[in-house]
Length: 244
Length: 110
Image 1 (cartoon, rainbow over the protein chains, first blue to last red):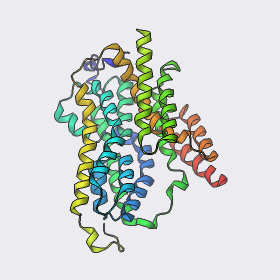
Image 2: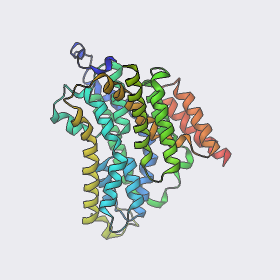
Image 3: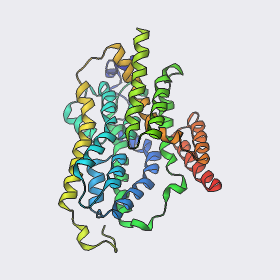
Image 4: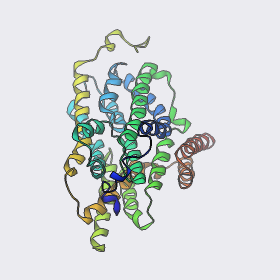
């Protein structure tokens, strides 16, 4: 519960050793995730090239948008010329989880000015957010430099490898066959273990898993993340209500 | 960055493509700052705090939920191995075990 007031003891930790090392610490924490990014970025770039996007337009998309799920969907829906409104709407749906992620991060960012948080949030993807938040919970303080180190590694790998994929194009085979997609499940599972506070606290997660899996099986499109998260939060709210 | 088989015209950035990319980027950025801006200066009550504490785990598990219901036995077994690895080892070994188990099991199982 003390997670709710992260800034009270933050002052005591301001002299935390080696602030300069924070960026590098974030960068090395991101290495396993970067490993998982490479094959997906190559595939995305190759698929985009097949849809007619140039080797310049691909990094333009991945560099400005920087959200893998929405980029795969956009490339899937891509026509020449593209349906702008349809693609923007799908992007909003797939990335709506960011609203919740930003909200969860808000208490940790209270001491930072908008001129720092607004540019930093540009780099908030599932992995940079989860690593940054897990680190903040562990050290009772959000380290912007650590988060930026994570972000820099992920961003450069994503942009570079999507551009490379567009350039290599169909010369790439099916990288999924080598099992690289399991990297994401592995990263997320390790992050979940870091947030583990016992079976009781995990009940909303279970609700989210069941609702998301059922939605994924029954409803076409990307609704499953929003449905799962909504179910999990509803269960958390109901349990808090009962406990009060 | 222009490949040998890329048509010369495709090297330029098409105006409508650029507009679509900018629209995507704007929408995505709004989702990134929206939740933060809404809660930035709020003090949450105990119930809202309990909900927000559950939120990160709910989002993470929902994103990987399709892996839990993939119909392929090789994928499910690889996921089970990855769950076991994640419950005891740090990030890098778990990622390597996950990739290796999925790659090997899919190869064996077809």
